Length: 334
Image (cartoon, rainbow, N blue to C red; front, side):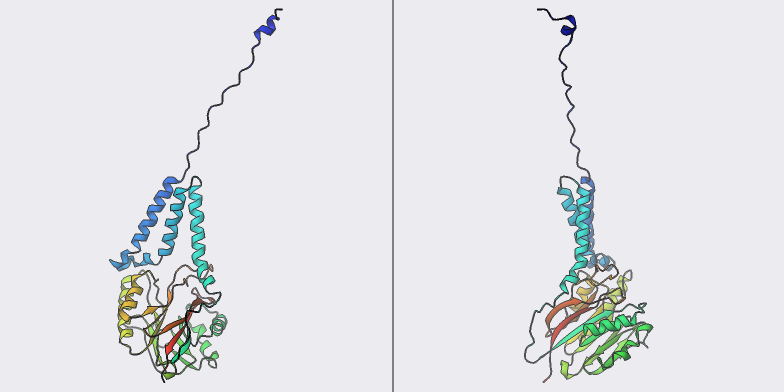
């Protein structure tokens, strides 16, 4: 039977073929490559202080440059979200650097025991910040640290009454408030035999005292060097103080704010020229965000002094620095 004309004229509709979708090319690859090269360049610049001391400032940020380089490297190999991945890795890295000293200070890490003929000493260095007027917080932190010997740096006028308030705990005290640029104090539970301080000279301001036979005649130095952009002056200061320390007889303890990190040429010169061993690596500055990034407060010892407990940081108590402490064993006089 013939179908109606209308029916013959109608044909099945053919589905339209969809155009193939183009895959979106991942973005951020070029930016990650450039960032990776920048990170490598900055890491290289951190070593240039060996050639020209002004470049030593880059050494202070070696850890941060490493985090930047790693972040962009990981971003480069990600199939997508390259820049976002790099950014997240860098944020995690910076936070990890700042959390490291807090985690390391939760419990004492014992690395040695006192032996016969030695005396254990807990020593501390604390840059209290010149404009920090919270004297009560600083005093409370000094009491909490309970070091046998503590060097206090940038002791502004508002904090100077602390010494009298701590006289019963620290009967042996020495300060150099009357010397230009020498705003130090050393508090000790042990007696000392002699002391001196220097402010305006070729080296950095420093304070020095020699403990009695109870601590084997240990000489304690408190030092505060100038900082960037005065790199050449800082290098000259460190060179001069290294000579003074190296000429000092007997066991030596050197601590303070050196405005230089373990990666810097500045600290390398001090260690090598004065024949010292650095006991500190933890970041101590800045304290404002609670995530310190730069290790510039340090404790050094001469050969024959052993580390008993690894470094810890305290509480800033209004300062932009965290105090740093270690426990050491010094040869005691018979």
